[in-house]
Amino acid sequence: MWVEEVMEKFMRIYKYQAHGYAFSGVEELLYSLGESAFVNMTQRSVAESLLQVGVTQRFIDDVVSAVLRASYGQSAAMPAFAGAMSLAGAQGSLWSVEGGNKLVCSGLLKLTKANVIHATVTSVTLQNTEGKPLYYVEYENEVGNGSDFYDIVVIATPLHPDNSSSSIAFEGFDPPIDAAQGSFQPTVVSLVHGYLNSSYFGFPDPKLFPFASILTTDFPNFFCALDNICPVNISANFRRKQPQEAAVWRVQSPKPLLRSQLKTLFRSYYSVQTAEWRAHPVYGSPGTLPRFALHDQLFHLNALEWAASSVEVMAVAAKNVALLAYNRWYQDLDKIDQKDLMHKVKTEL
Image (cartoon, rainbow, N blue to C red; front, side):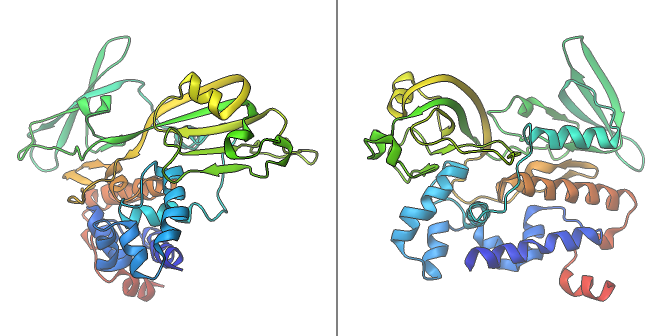
C-alpha cells in the first residue's frame, strides 16, 4: 500500500506534462507530485520510512533488501523515494524490448529524423550576445574536431567523475557551472549459458530445484541476483528449461565474476557474455537535489536520477526538459514551477 500510494502520486506527472507544465529543479518536480512528503523521501532511508508505516524489520531484511540489491545493488539505507521506485518494479507488469532497451533511444532518434553527430562533446562555452544566450559547443571524434553554435543545449548524460562525459568543460559562465553530484554504481551483468550448481543453494538433486530467480540480502556478497531468462517473444511451443538442463542465466554483480565464482554458481558452462557499466547513482548521504536548468537555455536531463533511476524516470526527465526548454524559449512562464497543479489541471479540463 505504501508503494502504491507513492506511485499513484508519481503518476500525476503524466497529466502535468500532457498540459505542458515543466519544472526547473528536481525538488520543484517532486513537491508538485507529493509535496514535502516526496521531498523528505529523498532525505530519509527506505528502512526508516517502512518501519514508520508498520513494516517489520524482518520483512525489510529478507524481502525489501533483496529487491533493492537486485535493482540498485544497494541496501535499505538508500533513500526512500528511489527505494519505492525499485519496489514498484518488483510487482510485475514490466516490459522488455527485444534487442535491448537501447532500441528505445535509437528508435526515437530515427522517428524524429534527428541530425546525429557521432562525436564526444568537450566543451560548452557561453557567448556574450545581446538578448538570448548562445552556446558554442566543441566536440571531437576519430576524424578530428568540430564545433557549432546552439540556442539550446541539453546534457543527456551523467556528469560525474567516473564518466568521460564529465570532462565537458563549461566555460564563460558566471557563476561557474558544476553539475557533478557524486559517483555512480558499477554494475556487471553476466549472461551464462550453463548448468546451475543447485547443490550450492541446498538442492543436491538439480531436478528438485524449484526456482527461476534467486535474490540475495547480504551474503553471498559476490552477486546480487541470479535468474533464468527467457526470450522476449515467447512462442506457443516455448518450454522453460528444466533445472537439470543447460539454460541461460543472468547474474548481476558489483564486480566481474572470477572464474572461481562462476564455478561456485555453475557445475559447468558453455559461454559467458559480460556487460559492465555505471548504471545509477550511489545513493549515500542526503544532499541538495540538483536542477534541470543549469543556465537560461542549458539543461541537464540526468538531474532526476538523483531522486530515482530507471528507464521510465529518465523518460519523464526528458519530457520535462523538452517542455522546460520550450516554455522558456517562448516565455510561457506560467507553465514553469507552478504550485497547486492538481487544481490547475482540473480547472483546465
